[in-house]
Length: 124
Image (cartoon, rainbow, N blue to C red; front, side, top):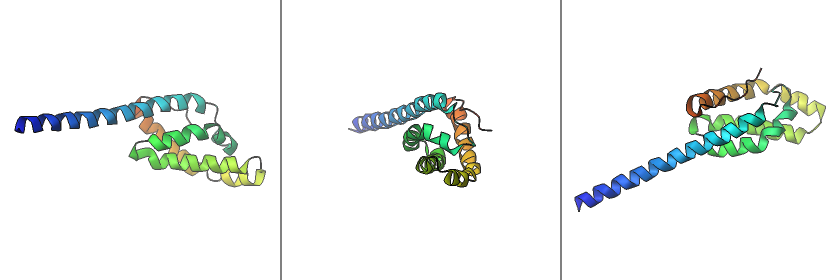
């Protein structure tokens, strides 16, 4: 009986570890796809963030805890840029927030390189 319980506990623990690994791998794969699209995003142009909004939302959902909030910053900014559209006044207001977004993006980039071995395009 003890042996059966030990086997069940081991199988359950292993299954949990495999699921976590799969989630992390899926995030890394999605991050790689995102990196290819983000090459054309100019961090100084809020309107460019709309190009990565859908991918950023997906990554925010699957992101590890240490960068989930950073993805939230990027997604919120991209949503605001989408809402602003071509309104120059609203886009100018958003431009003042790029520092916060760039800080979040740097955190995401560091985590991507360390955990996923993915190089995200640099923001200047």
